[in-house]
Image (tube, rainbow, N blue to C red; front, side, top):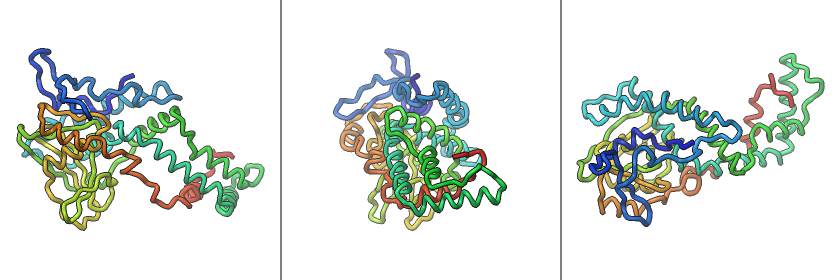
Length: 340
């Protein structure tokens, strides 16, 4: 099944009408290739098996359906208004936009490709726990006391071996292509249950430009950055990071600029068109799109494309302390329905 990593309706915003084919087309910009005017919003960002779950054949279609109905549909009805300066970001409008933006980040090829990093970190944390005899014994003791005070009788006491086995089943993932894809598919299901309150409660702005100097959109359209006092941008800030800004172009002349409700030590500047386009190219896995062919746009794309890689040079989490991560998770788990 071919799934859309970028919604067709969003890509249509950046299309032009081709008189020859009598259809909507996109200018596609790619590394090392001249711009091509032949991309279609229908197929430009479709990937075979993108949401596939190797152990659940029905899940891919379910994800596509839920994304279309629950996430894309409510925002599609807002697109025409979003380009109007008179449009106001009421709570009823920010709520579906918040879900749309977070899911748009998670459904990209860039995010899927970062799954290996997430699993590697998770397995590293697991190994840290399995090598700590004190933590294994402490969790076993905690589970036994919890069972006693709740009146549960499992016929024997939990041992460190039981705890280790439970940790492996609960947390570990075999880093094969199949399990990576399963993990990614499950992460989309999980993301649909989450809601980013900081973004929802933040400040919502728009940036405008003229048709002759348009915004582009990439196959990873949601980008984040922080800006220092000298004006330099650092890509890849988490959505709840201090001073983070979230950017999403929604048409060649309009770009959303969200300031999540986080601590801010710097006053945000209005991003330039070049700021946005360079970042779109940097985050792109393979392609950027626009409604015109432009040597200026191509120069920006060729200079920046695919220089930001999730899980490699941005959105990496190796720096975090993992010595107690699995321990803390298992100390908070309840036993009901979980026999070891």
